[in-house]
Image (cartoon, rainbow, N blue to C red; front, top):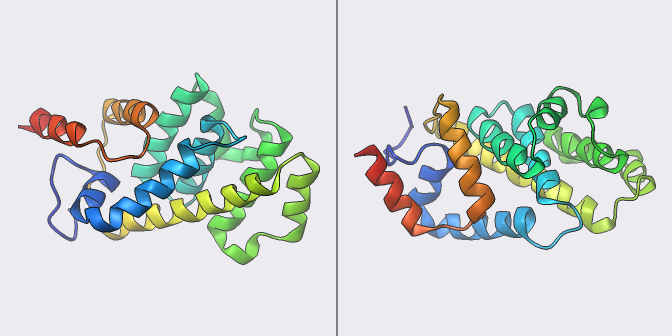
Length: 189
């Protein structure tokens, strides 16, 4: 049960962002830029970073939501599961393994991002911007994970919910779409 009254038809981060739309707006905009904006990393790769961090933070809502989004963007479900178990043996590029290592270090603490991790990423072909964005995505998802769990936001258990959420994320990105909120309300009533 959430620590504050939230709209029951908006579980997880969605209800929290709706609760404080003024503070949600810049967070949503940053998320949209980082995960859906121009980048040399694919949207699927960026969702893998969000998934790994959320998984390591044990945030069930965010892990399941971003796994669904990553699976849709990647067109399969094996890679995401392997990344969560052990990204070093997952079927991703060496550059992506190095970036996931940076994301994992960021999740543990900013000072865990060492020169050797940065060097590994650069040697694997990562650009300065890719390194920057990896750290920022990881830090942002630490915020989201702590926000969702710290407010005890509702976490649905039905896989179908997350499949639909993954489809909304991959179709609409992270911007607030008022018509979706109204549709969700009607589905609950």
